[in-house]
Length: 117
View 1: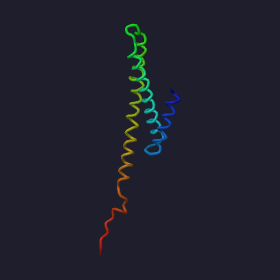
View 2: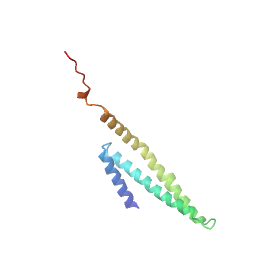
View 3: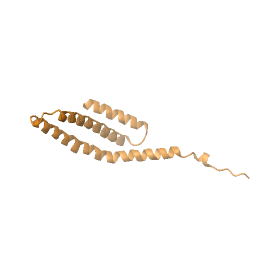
View 4: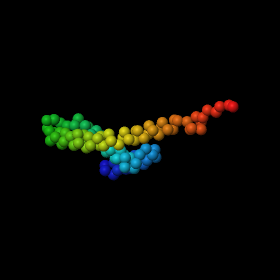
């Protein structure tokens, strides 16, 4: 799963680089956060399926393991990546909005008004 996550983070970083929206550091951080959150989501989905198939009260120890996994992945690791995204993602959005605004403005030569003499 780690190799898959690294491949996803690298693919995301390369894709974001194509848009030239920020430094390699910001792009890498955002890509890693997005990939890690996706991986956490996959683990969360798997744990939910396991939880639904438990035979309770016989599987209380399995339930304990699942709840510990939820706590670690969702309340700690996911929260860390969300905090990191709150720093990096707005920078990319701001840079994208500036890029889009600049692309929408007509060139200065097209803005000129010529007066007849």
